[in-house]
Length: 547
Image (cartoon, rainbow, N blue to C red; front, top):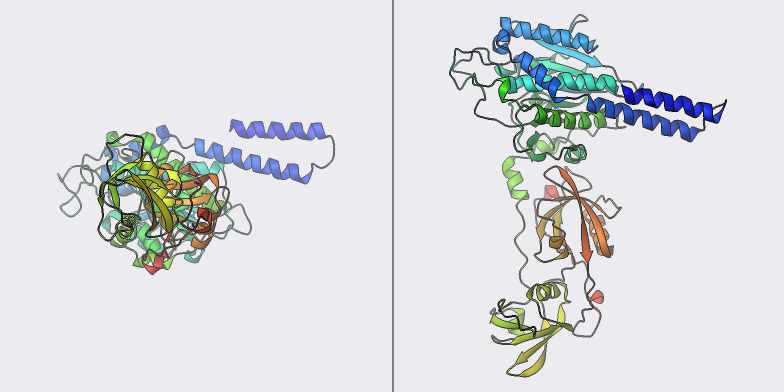
């Protein structure tokens, strides 16, 4: 709360210094933005590992007997959580002005909300859900054994329940523009019964729900790796996650969406969903899933990421709708479309002695049959002296010059002590940057790298297949053609902003403009066009290009 007090004091001091009368409009706007930033930081900082550990540890006590839905322990856990909702000052959103929604064989969902602060947006609802039940003493149907012992379910799902409580506390410090519903589902372990019941008998009209986040098993972050499900259920969700990945978690944006947790109940109703998940482990559905196995610091990182995502959604002007194409997308399709393109074929067709360091050209060891080099009459044992007027004394430099050279160029060679000039027609198009990409319907404004040409500027910049490029210099883009135009216009050192496994990065393309000459004596710029090449990925993901 201290940052808010400082803000108030600063605002009062501003009024005193300016004297009586209204503050300028620009000052109002600046101060409003400052106050929101301070509230947001206070909310983010309120998510603490010690509180997450305390909540999860309390729910994973033996006294709750494994929290089986409808059992004595399950009811005791529900009562404990209802008291937490009271402490957090959530508005009851269950039945009869209570937090509970009863269903089935003594099962109970818990529902509380924070009403939106914006008159225009408060009718829209974001659901934050987590199941609080587990499997009790276990049975052959739901436990990997041994059965008959209390299964405390610290990770599954005391961790997600603790995360929800911390998120509710954070949003009380930073009230959202949209309404946020906090839902603790019962009987998830019996077949997602709690969330399925709610979407068929919602206590808040289902047509108001714009997005659902499911917190299930977020307690065992290992090697900083996080799985995120649902990123293709709307447009731009992967970018949204990456923007708020301040702890640089390594994120796997899986395409899998099975009926294995409560997000699926909303997915079937065409509501966009996300679910962070720290993965299965050997204690899953065993009595050994106790609080000692949790990673509270990792939980804090995951919950802070979730808060950033939810905060942006709860306060943005618009939330993208459900993307129906995700229903046709599978992990197998992901493997197909994310497979890197094969290397480009060689443009010249020679290999040379890499051990020789004479400082005078490169000694040809082999000329590939039917290659441009063979067609130009090059032979084994020739010494390559210059390409397009550029002297050759380094294999990597020679490779780069061949990549950049115009289609028709001049190669100077030495054969039997005689210096000759051979006109050669190189295969393919000149490679200026060394980058191929595709576009993806689920990720507007992103170019996804499909191939990097070795020794090219793109390779030197550290780019790799699978990277997601967001920005060229200060420019964003909306299409493949626009991205291609930005690359074609790039000169000198150009900054690229990209994402790799959920982590935002920047790098610099260093574009050299070697004064290469074509066989006609023209500067290479006259012949070295961008050279777009279709790569032929599935139509859903757009055309690929080559730069």
